[in-house]
Image 1 (cartoon, rainbow, N blue to C red):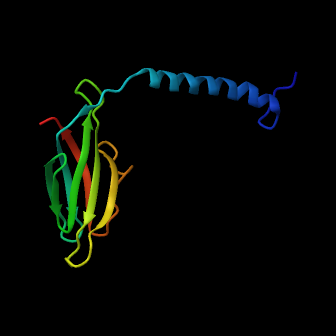
Image 2 (spheres, helix red, strand yellow; image 1 turned 135 degrees about the horizontal axis):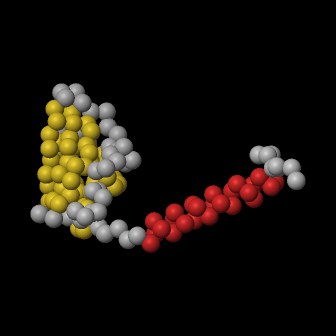
Image 3 (cartoon, rainbow, N blue to C red; image 1 turned 60 degrees about the vertical axis):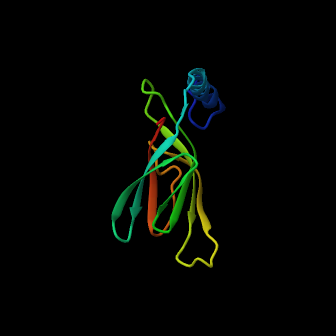
Length: 139
């Protein structure tokens, strides 16, 4: 019997069937593991002013706003993994740009989840400022 090549229908059955089985088992194993998230009360973020190269650390309780430059940063929720699991922090953040003119309404420039281990997944895109999540804690 001739050996199937990548252009023959037999190739799909021989090569893809085991691949699909492995992917299914990996997904099943991942879903069988439960990840524990603990609710946090205090968020620590790093803020960068790209113009002056000023780096600041912002710390705020969930629900309270902090200002950095023209930005108003409000964390609505944060959660973190317990110490025995892989380190991860997540926070739902709303950032508004207040601008320099008080007669102009503030513009929302970011609303979404930020993750400490992967800041590029969901980042603030602003020409002057960068804000990243450092930690979420219970106290």
